[in-house]
Image 1 (spheres, helix red, strand yellow):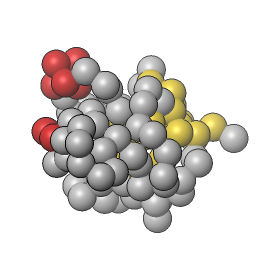
Image 2: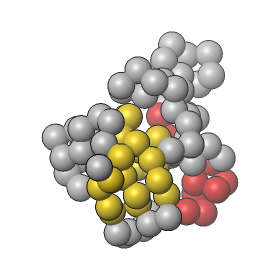
Image 3: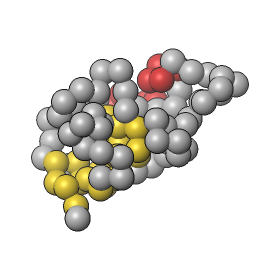
Image 4: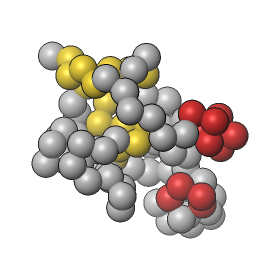
Length: 89
């Protein structure tokens, strides 16, 4: 996902634009997850993407994840995939 309207429904001038559910700024390495499965702060490797769970999302329920990719074109190219997930300690 990106911080843009297409992903989050907010525009740059909107309150909370680019801010995750945990209160941090969304950026590379940010992962949105269902906090009942992966609590905030959980470090994950998803395919070759390494990140930390810092966000949630309306469609992010159960074992579904969303990876922050800042560029809309790159995010669309990455698309939806089924990838191996490793929890780091």
